[in-house]
Length: 326
Ligand code: R5P
Figure 1 (cartoon, rainbow, N blue to C red):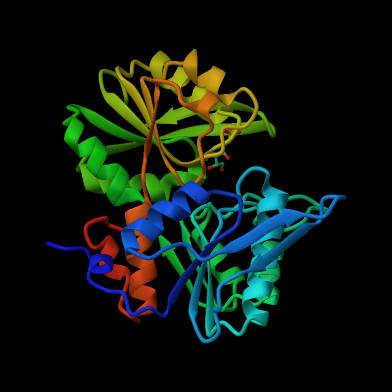
Figure 2: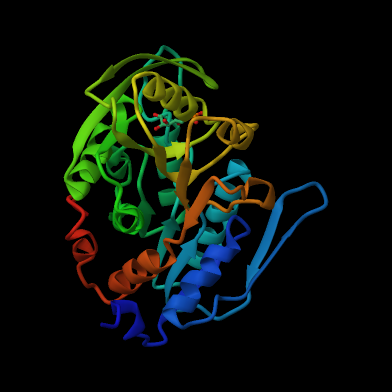
């Protein structure tokens, strides 16, 4: 059966992208059967972003595809400037498509004198002129509420879940590497019809975590660690070590956003992880393409959601088998 996005194209949809992840934007455009809009993107000599949308987008439904990934400040600023340009070019509606929403980890004031960057970034996107947001696997679902415009929050669980289902792994336990990830891990446990275990971790610094306890039984089981993002790899590698010590057999990791900062890839290479599965919400540079890392594409999922938004069709059906709600 044809997917929704393969049946529809009324010529009123425009896809634009900045420099954060053109490969994903191209893949989405290919799924939708339309070309990417022409954006001239450059820099002034001192580094300021300079751009021009070279297609007429007056009265069009514009989707700006730009994960705010590394380098985060450049990606975010490009997104804001693109939104501004689209608004001033009389786009009918502007949707910021953020396959990865960066600056999301600082989402509450948990210590004195710290910012709430997730709210600040939401404010910036709205102030720039976005009318809607389409995003995926937010660090915390509540971030949707930081926007006073509609937010469609996708989950990659179906894409990633299908990959694991094909492996037909026996004696499986899904593991959340911290208490904050329980809801996401529970969705996978439901999909795989298996038990859930939880790693009780303490973060000592931005790059160092320490496992305190494992709640649940993993001895003699194959495990899949589920998380929204991997940055330094500290949480994952420490969790894998603790799970191995507790008797786990094969240890897989299913992590949506591969930030993979610093020496994360080296850490994974030498860890107890058998395979790390990530999405292409963030580009993987050549140096990060190692045998242990498998990248799955979410282009079709995003293309379908873009098309449904354009035609005002419900997107909740995209998650009907995932045990999560849109
Ligand atoms: C934390 O709450 C997140 O879900 C990830 O577990 C965390 O950001 C991973 O960071 P790192 O890879 O640096 O340990």
